[in-house]
Image 1 (cartoon, one colour):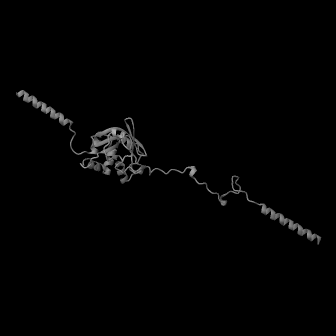
Image 2 (cartoon, rainbow, N blue to C red; image 1 turned 180 degrees about the vertical axis):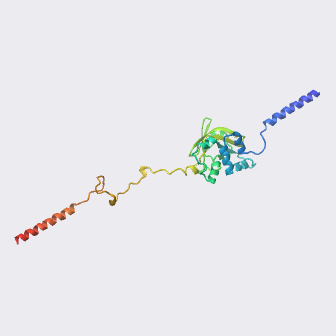
Image 3 (cartoon, one colour; image 1 turned 90 degrees about the vertical axis):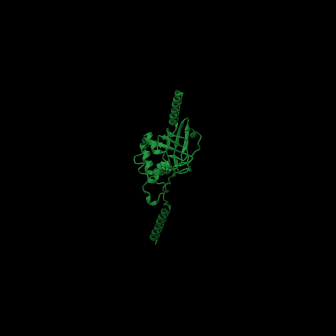
Length: 242
């Protein structure tokens, strides 16, 4: 009887240990801790903290009233390094906030859901109106590509997912058109759109052989000269006769 009791206690302890190991860790979610554990996201973490977007994300994730979850695209440090030097520092404080929010979707999307999701996707930086921080997703087999209108990124890895929060590693910084397209240099007009310059008489060279303007009509001057010569000759003749 004593052996049976001991055996029963051992089974209970083993079952309890197994159950505890399968239970997800309790406590509030923290996006910066998730990224720090994954590594290679130092720049994104710094931007999240400076812009205070990380606090907003953590508050929403741990708010019981937020039932839609959240999806985050996380560019690696290498992705930020591939940007033109000084790109991030040239942004205003508001633009840095918008840049980070542009990587956050206000609902949970699993990898399989990207196959059937409708474009454009709404981000926390704005709604899905064209030009107002939208994202478009395309898939090819198991590959998921994210397009901003300025650049295209690929989901390289799933960093974290629990049914409420999904964090995906992307190979490029998602650049919103509202920030980066406006800062690009204006396109020069094409020759078809250029208006030909009108030639003014003062600007023409009197000896130019390429002048397309019609030649001056000197026939009137010549007629006056001939008429004057005739009158002069007639006057001289009349004087001699007299």
